[in-house]
Length: 200
Image (cartoon, rainbow, N blue to C red; front, side):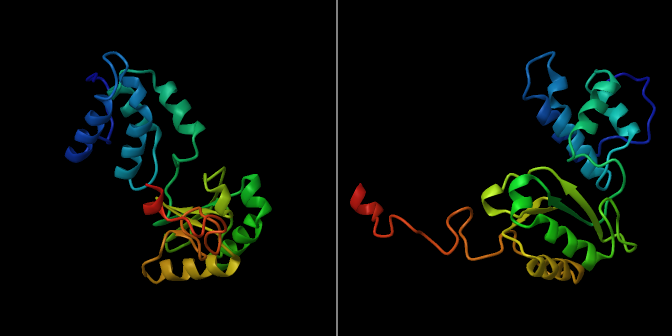
């Protein structure tokens, strides 16, 4: 790392080890490939967002042009460029979720939180965003809150979820209906009599 970079940001001892772990995955001279996990580590260390100074720090750390780090950080919506609330509510607006009611989920969030997309509640508890493809299309509509995904939502279950988070209560990620992961809603529809032991 160059000694010319002057910034208030620097890795914590724990995150320095994490950064080195990711860099070690790549061949000599290819350390720049670790830019995405390093941005994620830095974002978490910084309380949920990255700054220009952080991008420059990572660029210097990986010996790459700062503009290359900025290109990555501004392309992917997973990197936030301003502070976010304790609970970052990210409503998927891609076609499968939209067809299954994501507009209603967004409306429920706006009504319950009293904010619009891109805003944070005054108490700093919630930030509301719209994102593209949460990758849970079969269980649409889906919402990511920090690192957890909540699926098969209705305006009512979304509001109840936000109520629990506001009270500091535990919430259960995954489908919010009677469904095992991405299996059929309501249980199996085929192979009901299948016995795995008999098939051995």
